[in-house]
Length: 423
Image (cartoon, rainbow, N blue to C red; front, side, top):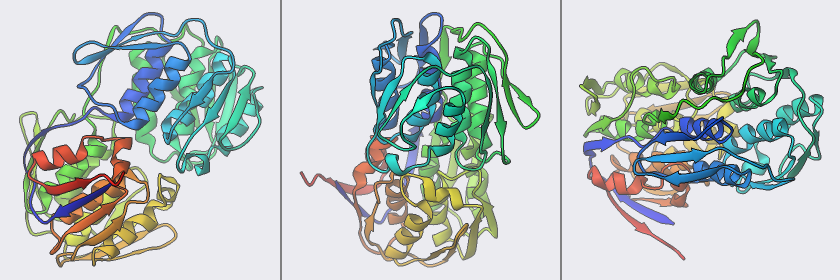
């Protein structure tokens, strides 16, 4: 799919889509709880969340749409060695590998796109140490056996999803367990989110020396209902659009969210945008933009592409540091972000662990290869707002991974684009 975007401004009010990260965790917890759970969220279904739902249905859970909510009925009668298709979702794979190991039903895991190349070796090694047989360190793979309660050592600097996956699995074991970290934890907000969800399902998780403790308990206890907050990661793109000469107001974002990408508001303000809360709405609007000396990317890898776009329009240099983990995303996100900005006529260079953007003049426009990465496709559309000429996004269907209605909402806010389906 090609999308042709023309210069313009975004103005108006938009309601945030549900937090993808919260939905994954809520669905998994509800699928193995003691009774049904109502997950309250507006209608929305990115491909990643659909992959998790599909796998949970294969494991015996059921999902029924009831107005603005899903009613999740827990799994009963686990299948033996089910085929679990994770699509391109890293969350689905890294969460369900340890969960299925804890269930003891075995399973065949497959995936698509770049997912087979994304790292899972440390997680697989940990599962093997827990008594589970896994035939490969990458997809496709076959898992057999049942995970033992105990202590599990995982890296803290590769993917927080390893830690979250194990924390989601341990309540399914009668003896609980401990997750120890070999290195300091990066993207800690995602683990905080997992602990928050577990707490709502009456699973006590405590931080302990160098890790996290899940004590022996009664498993997942449904709260009856869980309300999903808005997604800071995806809304950061439209908030950035407001900063580029427009005015965007976004509803349903939580000021107290455990989502680390809520930092988008403060960082956009640092660039010089007017950012303010008006009741329950967060508003960003244009202003003279100046580069930010240093932005630490360690906790916010998903919003670096769109912040780099803002930096490309900001006078001076912006340095994104501690960014090596961006290379392990749907694309090598350091390389693809720098390439996107250069393709549009901007100045960006990647280094081993850093991204440097020098901005201050309008971009020209041109073709952008989205590299199969939803964040690059959305960032390219925001960059197009200030370009002198048209921008053509190649492979823009990547937005379906997390935000299928992105271009509809882009138009709703006044964005000028044509979606071209090339068969």
